[in-house]
Image 1 (spheres, rainbow, N blue to C red):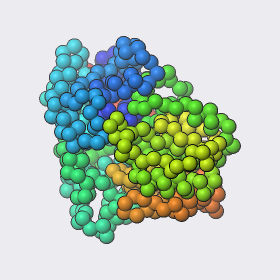
Image 2: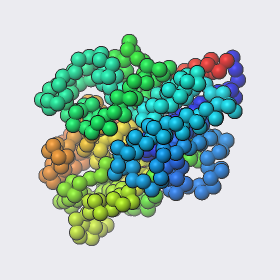
Image 3: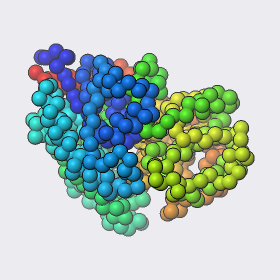
Image 4: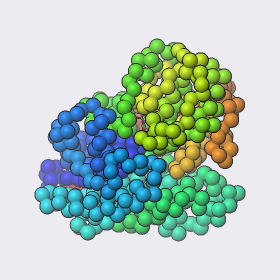
Amino acid sequence: MSTEENVNVIIVSAALQGHINPTLRFARRLISRGVHVTIISTELARDRMLKHSVSKNTDSYFHNQEMHFEFFSDGLSLDFDREKDMKTSINSLFTIGSKNLSTLITNLTKHQNYSCIIADPFIYSAIYIAADLGIPSALLWMQPCALYSISYRYFYNIDSFPNLEDPNEKLQLPGLPLLEVRHLPSYLLPATPLHIRQVMIETTKAWDKVKWVFVISFYELEKETIESMNSLAPIYPIGPLVSEFLLGEKEQDAISMNMWNVDVSCLEWLDTRPSSSVIYISFGSIIVLSQKQVDNIANALKNSNKSFLWVIKPPEKGSEDDAAKLPQGFLEETKGKGMVVTWSYQEKVLMHPAVACFLTHCGWNSMLETVTAGVPVIAYPKWLDQPTNTKIIVEKFKNGVVMNYEEDGVASVEEIERCIEEVMEGPGAEEMRNNALELKDAARKALQEGGSSDKNINQFVNDLKNVST
Ligand code: UDP
């Protein structure tokens, strides 16, 4: 058996807020067990981390005793608007980016032995690079186990799927509720642009090469799905990968990556609000709301007369003209009652006693964060994994309400008001709060010593030590 000093791993992460966050948290859990971690991402991540995170000292920031960072170019300039031209950015990442990543990892292996390369599903080339170098690899799946199960069964032809072009079709898969086509991840649906579906098609082709599949979920949340995968391709939940702060553990002087400047003044503002009175609203780091969606949310907030904290992420450079604007006079009319910021410290917001509920797009990190904070939700999903997340969490555990909306994604003012009323003071509100608190308890236990996720991480580290001998 080798000593712990010999265990080195590489984690490759896409430069997306929802991927970098769990990557950093997984890295810290491995480091606390004596593993040395090198995190690799694209130069865009490096640029954003330096611009918007606490430390400006590059050397101590990227090469400290805890973690070591390396970056590669995806072949595009830093100010290229990747959100606006996703097709070009995906193509470039998979061609030029993959070559650069291969060169980087090959050079690193000349100076150091690595026991495992852990790949982001969006940078699946890391799995092939690991195979070429004879290094075991793992997948760090950034969505719930349900999405892994659905994608696996679809791409590996395990179960027969109905015609996905027909919105009236339904699908029953092991461990999952009956799903309508609209509840399936949008990257399976024919209406989604091919370059987005292609990412999933390519990543799944690499899955049979990985030794471990980790998911940032936890066993108690998705028991049946996890068990249904055991005979096909076992998955190991290691989540919720939220910050130590949210788990009530000792907070680390953590390296963080924020893609936008955090407005901490909203935490001070929350201090002035009564307990359980504020609706927190955020649609994550990717969704851009339409003008109609913004108008309807704003009008519903005004009519409901509730306090709110609303994150409206700034548009990328060059996209300012397309960004939806708040209705004229909205900020003045809601002054004192509400606050709009461009980016928050979401986990601290969710843990704040003034927050009553979270109007969310149901991105998986946001879902896990609200579950771990015990905050009920108003689910307003748009695409990708979000509609499925709503089905398997909110509808199953009843920790909130699900918004109804038309095909264009626009919920009416009345519908938004109905959801606010139901979660905050309707007859079912107390039960939703209690259900949310039960989930909070389960989430914390999973990562405590002897908890389901803690055991999976320990087992992985033991496996790594055996690989290193
Ligand atoms: N987030 C944040 N501040 C905000 C809004 C979001 O720190 O104002 C973080 C949030 O805590 C989560 C991530 O951004 O960790 C968003 O990830 P998620 O998977 O929920 O959604 P995505 O951005 O991938 O759609």
